Image (cartoon, rainbow, N blue to C red):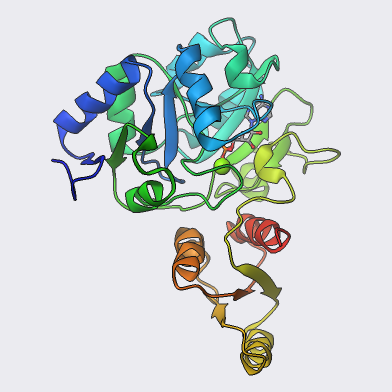
Length: 315
Ligand code: AMP
Ligand code: MG
């Protein structure tokens, strides 16, 4: 079950999940697969474990964590006065890549929310993590399993490359199918507000549920919205089309700069799934500049471009 003499365990094996649950009950951290990105999980009811996440990631305690639950009916264990909008959204999109921000109840510690009276909650859509949550009989809190500000991991290998043995167990559940962090909707405001773009878009919510979601305004409350985030070591430049990217690459190459074009054309799902691994791969090969052709502004393309802009602003 142990792979490559590391702390990566095959999440498809029941015994691996048992080991992970045992570690979580001992207040240790476990990396878990989800459909968005890999999470660094602590048992939600343990303040000691939750604090370890901030230490290991180097994340400021003011950046709250997302609580992950096994099923929609667990919402009541952690929230208060659920607004009707939250009920509609969770019925429609859970399990799935949507996080809602709602009023918290006393089961949620200040460590999780950075002292806020609201909490972010999601029900992930990944068999291994659902299995783990069902058997753990508690929720977990899990930010992305990388050092603060860096590119999120979309495979167990990425987690190991970032955190190594500092995390007790890494449950391998294969490559993340979506590859970008969840959409976050604040349901405590009227109208509800988009805090972070993801696979589920505001237009889709309007079409599916007839709910009008406002775009984020003012100072952002979501850490993923910081100007500098999702940062690879290489510099990221953005181009509107392939022809511009090619000529920029030529220009840089002539200056002796190792530059590469990142272009997925119109395949935005593939773009989302492979964006982070391609940025990591560029770092491994010591590429100095990635020239990314931005995605069409539809569907998950909006979230891709948001992440690319943050990556481009990081240098
Ligand atoms: P990550 O760092 O990928 O785990 O993202 C977690 C995101 O959820 C961050 O952007 C947080 O700021 C956001 N978040 C968590 N809890 C809250 C909350 N109570 N209100 C607003 N945003 C939140
Ligand atoms: Mg993150």
